[in-house]
Length: 215
Image (cartoon, rainbow, N blue to C red; front, side):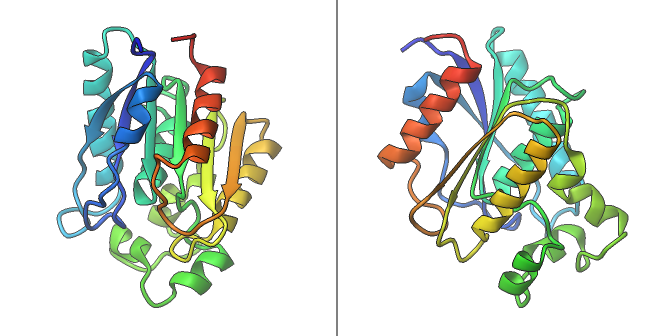
């Protein structure tokens, strides 16, 4: 299949390690994969991670030969992908679409606090526990940055015990209220199922058909 777009893939790992998922299962859908690297929390605090993936996106765009640029990731990488999609690489709207698999979006939500009270990766990202009104907390919260109109695919397992699926549902509701195009798929399973699973590939392929020219 001819490449339809470049996909900058941002790995998960709670911003402190590299998870195994590399996005390779999505390549057969006509995507040219580029892996993003970013500093972990033992090296730098927010927003260094956003700065790093923005730099990676610029490189991927330059190397893409004019292909549309998609940004995607899983878990903590999905959070960063959502920031890129909603806020843009250099300006809002300069990303064709975002793909977010089981991403965390709001560190102050009750569901997140209940589930991750004893081990909150957001505290490592910020260098302190997230708190209402704290500028770094506000800036790192995905739902702070709605608008811009970049289409989003949100995928989540309903039995996720690392990132509650209600994070994706709440983001979906907020995006719809803002008039933002979003495709959401809540499916069976827990955190980080294989992207090669047929239903995940099918929903991703259907989303791509709405945002990309035919391959």
